[in-house]
Length: 286
Image (cartoon, rainbow, N blue to C red):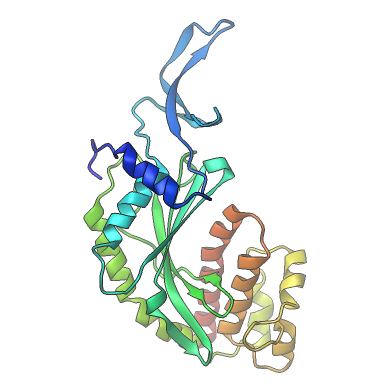
């Protein structure tokens, strides 16, 4: 989208019709007033509200450029039509916090890769945004584990596609970033295969919990959660000295994907798990 481009209302309506279960807010800038009687306007400032219900998202400068989530869906949809090397690309939009936050997930079901027997993954890309300004428009790569649909891992953050809403979105940058990231997917698969052959020593297992984003109560629940392919809990696998880095990562992402209720926390926790587990693998491999 160019800086002064206005998305046609018809295309926004098409997006809402295509995804009827997704809440799309209607962001609008309104003036701010002060005083006992609201006859004094706050200069150079606007309230960013949801015109659907009057909820206030945040306060912004009067130069702020409103970006609708539907525009982001249209933009990415148009981009993916030009990417033909990776098979079908499925778009899955989701909004959180009454429309304040947004995730557009891209799935690549035809890029299935095997980590070990009956344990396959496909790449995904999460494009994240917000109207309440809590998150820049950004994106990250990861993967879905097909055996239990875990969302897992961030192996590379977008470099080109990390822009504030005030900056125009550059389509060719996003397309290039997606293609370059997917081009490195096989390299990451090889790394994850190494994880599946790397046993975690007890001292490393005990230490890693100090760095993971889980409470003591959550740790107790995670340790008795069976890993879906081996059927072993973390405790049982440690006792048998067969717990691998891949198994540990799988159980952690299994818990975050299916047991954490907050969608916002899920988004924040996924890259934290990836960071800690990758560090664990590197320390073991030294």
